[in-house]
Image 1: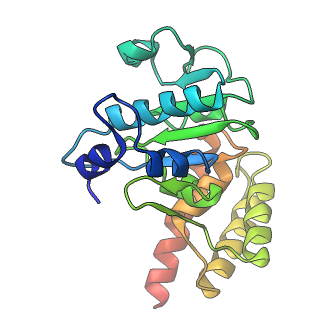
Image 2 (image 1 turned 30 degrees about the vertical axis):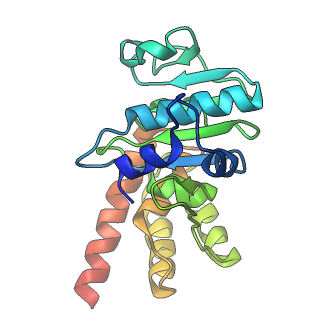
Length: 223
């Protein structure tokens, strides 16, 4: 379903959401608005966030890379940028075309309703699958489908990066663990990075990404 179809199905002439869609949105803690190459998603993401704010009667915080990018209709809301603040837990959060870096400001949240408005250069599909988010364009909840063993392997990968994957031992151990995921047909680059971003800085993630590149090249050569 394209963005225009979603927008037409959820908005009435009064600017509120149609009852069936409105009820569905309220069922989910995490809502994913994927990037669309041909249609603007900003109004949809903003509309969903305002709807949740009204219905839950909770404060809305806008998380954005630069405060100058905040939409006019949200200027009076609390905001968090790469340079300022952290979002308080327990409200509604709109991640407005966020960078990975600014998302470090909300990864501590456990009680907030989060609307993730994706920007094309910063894929959030891994985040959405990891959190079991509701995809507004498909009308489905998407899952990571990880086994307990897969999650344990991901935890070990993050543990090996306790010093940012700097040393040879951490690199070798991480490459071995990535190989284990590959052998189990459980390797998914987006999920590995999304899982690591729950606790690691972007500087550390850059080093992990290079290890993923090495692992992928090695496994491709072996096939």
